Length: 512
Image (cartoon, rainbow, N blue to C red; front, top):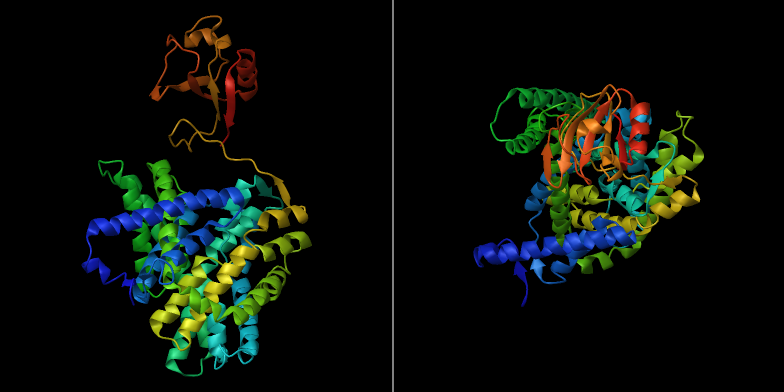
């Protein structure tokens, strides 16, 4: 077709510079769009997908239909996103909600897949597009959509300056970070059953799923511990290589777990969780590196997924897509949440309702739908289009209302952003109270030397930041207005009174 070109074959026909120009343009547009999305409460994932769709076969004309390459990109990107999520998760925060979070990530996913699968099977004969979809294929379609993506929820809440009550944030983070492996296992299991064409042994399937999840969790834990041990005992010689070493470890965790027949995605998340909650050298730089890498992975992943879809095909699945979306949002997800959380009496009705509403579908269901395309499952294109359509509806319907629903349910509270620390070093071993203050003219009224400030006992000024320079002060070090001091004290009350009396501005307290 005139004006169209295949993304894979065009690589051999045009210059590398032109390819790089196109990719950089798409990435730049995505980053700019993400900022606008944060401001107006639109999920970033939706914007990335739209940009990919506009650049695809029905837009700029880029034809990309290599499902195997898309699956490789999706798997690698998902590993980085899950690993980064594990790194950023504080075990102390999720401990109070560990039990309900794990139940939602396992039983909740299973119930969502089962209820949605039954609904898809019921309506499949009512639409011409769904004709011929059997029970197993219906369960496969539902399994791909069974996991949630809450990352965009918290991005929207932050931009709207809203936080959540009742420990909902760590609960949702734990669920969304750990429920992908269960959905993956269900998807792969049903793909194998359909391709084999044999009646499955239900007990054998359940044992296999439980075994692979157990192997994945154990492998992630052990390899995460091994990674921390190696990092703290190896002297590479270049500080910038330590984040690369952890990146290598994340890939190793996934691949090793896959070879020993475990769930690689769960292993990657557990590995990140263990590493992120351990002490190791250059930890701060590693966390910053993976934060950026996770964003890069999301942009690449969402653009790739957007390129795969043909918008004209989505028009053909509007009717079944809307029906499945409504059933998933208002029936399957609420039922699975309320049934899974029945044993937990401390979670009230409002909290359960909100958990039900923020079960957004994200990039992961589309990745799992690509697995069906790459495996050649019958009706795979129909599955992919339905999953893509449901994801768009979920992001539009739920993603744009998460803040408002939190207010309606009385679960919103004022968001308190984490304060950035000017002194970029890891001090987890220090248990004393740490204060950051800025020197003013009033501070220097009795002299400009550090000793002239007359700080209380058991207090040390460990660093001074002047402009972009850092140095360790002594008692006779002259200070200037605008200097920032990092102080450590065992007498917080006396030091806070001294800071106020001396007119030190920019008062911050960092307490471990």
